Length: 341
Image 1 (cartoon, rainbow, N blue to C red):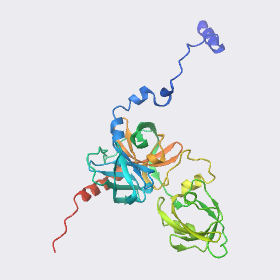
Image 2: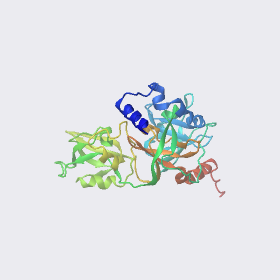
Image 3: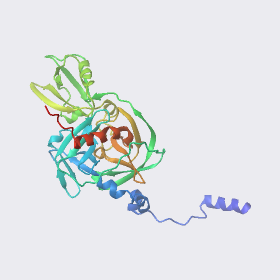
C-alpha cells in the first residue's frame, strides 16, 4: 500500500512520465479512418440518393432527395422558389427541368419530378416510426452527396411551435410625411437586407396593401409563411422602387437581430412550426436541407428540414410526411381517366 502511494505521488510530481503519444494526423482529427469505416455500408446509398437544385443564375438553392426511380424527389419547400426556371443536377453533371407536383406548407416539403428522368437511386422511407435513442449516431449526405457526415441525436423528439414570418425591419411608429412607414433599422442577414432595403426607406405597399401605420406591417405578414415571397413597394429619397422579399421565420430574425453571427455559416429561412422533429448536431449547411437522415445501419429516418443554429439541425421523421406524399406519387403516375360525356 505504501509503495502504491509513493508511486502515485511520484507520478503527480512529474518524476514518472507516461510514454509519449504520437499526435493524430490531420485526417484523423475529424474524419478518422476508424470513424468513417462505420459508414462504409451506407455511404454509397447516401451519396447517390441526392441531387442539387440550381437557380437560373446557376447557384445552388437546396438539396433534393430522390424518392422514386422515375425522377420524383422531395426538397425543402421554402428554399425551392421559382422552380419553373430552375434545374436539378446530379451524378456526372446530368441535369433536367423540374415539374412541381405538391407543396406542403405544414411540413415545408415540396414534391416534384425531374422531367424525363429514369434510373435514379431513391431512398426507401418507412411510414412506421423508428426508435432512435438520445445520443445515437446519425449520418447524412452533404454538399450534394460529395461526402457523408455524422453526428448524434442531441435532443428528444418534439413539436416546434411557430411565431410567424418577418422581414427583419424596425419601423418608425409615426407615419411618414407623404404616407407610408419609415424603416429605422434592418437586421443583418435578414430578408429585408437581402432584398436591398435600407434604413430610411419608406414602405408604401406590402403584398398589394397600402401601409398607413407601422402595425399594418405585422398584420399583413401574419397571413404568410416563412419562405413565401411578397412584393414591397417603397420610396427612397424621391424615387418609387419595388422589391421581392422572401420572408423568414420570426424566431430567426429575433435571434440574430444584432448580427452576432448566430448561425456561423447561415441558418434556414424557415426554422419552426413543425409538428414533430428529430434534433441532431450533424455539421450541415442550410443548402444541405432536403437531404435524407440515416442511422448508421442505413435506415432512412427522415429529411433534414432546418438548420437552426451553429450546432442544431431539425429533421422531419419519415412517418410524419411519407403517408401523405407516397399516394401523391402514385396518383401523379396514374391520373384518373376522364369520364365519357
